[in-house]
Length: 167
Image (cartoon, rainbow, N blue to C red; front, side, top):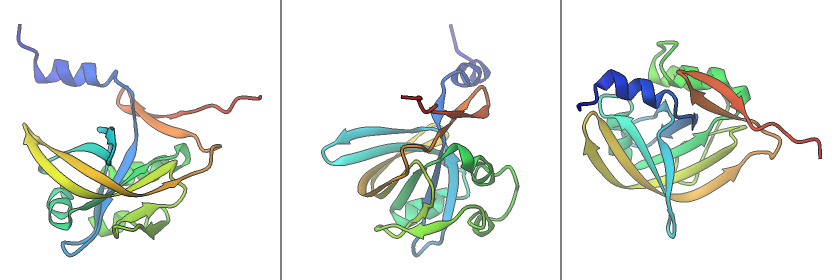
């Protein structure tokens, strides 16, 4: 039995995942995109894996700059995630007008108020099908407040997650 592209996409829509804004900055320029395909690889050395479409506008920037920041989006930052997902169709540099940004150790934009931000150096990029698989070693971590709620992507929509318990 062959799985069709649409069957795969429909099933993947049922796999909830954290919403992240991936940013890069350096000699090639500043860019960013929204992604849910992010996970840890190992804690020695601290390494993340992220996937992005090889045709994404930010792909050549990320490859040339060799750095990324994985900004784990807070529920209150849904609109910023939508901007970086390309839903507003604004130019790349205009995306950074959404949200407030600082510069991380590796030089990448870190989103103020993110649940967590991982500033990284890219160590390897593999190509698989339509996507790039990026391995990145973490150089700096900034954590948000324990009271921040995260944002997940499930059923082709954004949903807040992380209800505080009353103690």
